[in-house]
Length: 259
Ligand SMILES: C[S@@+](CC[C@H](N)C(=O)[O-])C[C@H]1O[C@@H](n2cnc3c(N)ncnc32)[C@H](O)[C@@H]1O
Image (cartoon, rainbow, N blue to C red; front, side, top):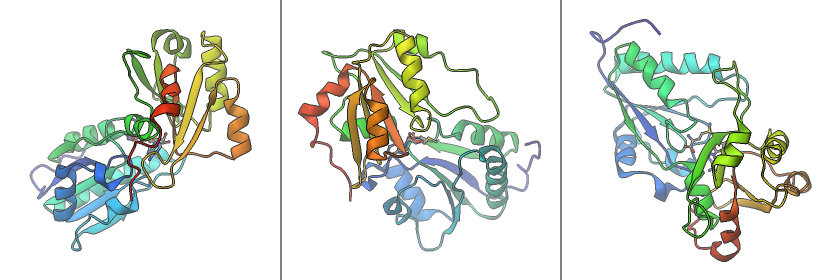
């Protein structure tokens, strides 16, 4: 993005994290911005109760992404943000979870900065912490795990990053939290076992982590693929791998799954 519009720009873009679905997990700062926004450009994973927080006067634009078409839509979305910031004072870019955690928020912010558009980030609660928590799985615990790695399981579109070193992750982290891993789970499970994890290593898949329709699959690396097929388990889900998953049997039911 090379166009610089700072001299003609009327407004500011707020890059807001919508959290993981439960409206009670939306930040006060984010909610206030939604109530006062002139324009809200939102992603597919933002839950309906969060969209209900948007004030009546706001123009709502769905920028939902489909698998495999990210880059084109990304450029279009950035262009919309630039155009709307020319016309309106408060433009909210609303993204699921936290905008900077596997949400392309950093790239959008770079484009806006390059274009001279004033921009501010409002972090959100990421699904990689909240979905396990609502399923009774703390991502760290003094008796089980002192380290956690957050990693994408989504195969690179356009190779914007080098291949993930699953062996290093298997050997270097006690808890592994995988975003966008359902479609590629077979390869990931194989790679982690080749990297040193035993076939009995516990794994949990949590779908719609903080919504009433939350689904859980708890198993081991050697069983989970069959469980996914049997249950016809689908994305969006967070995968958690490591001994902390054992806490699910004791702590499940204490996460306040939202309205
Ligand atoms: C493009 S990433 C966006 C992550 C988001 N920025 C965050 O911080 O949670 C989308 C992936 O996040 C995970 N995810 C997002 N919302 C979720 C939810 N409510 N329950 C479970 N997983 C979720 C899934 O792995 C999904 O495929």
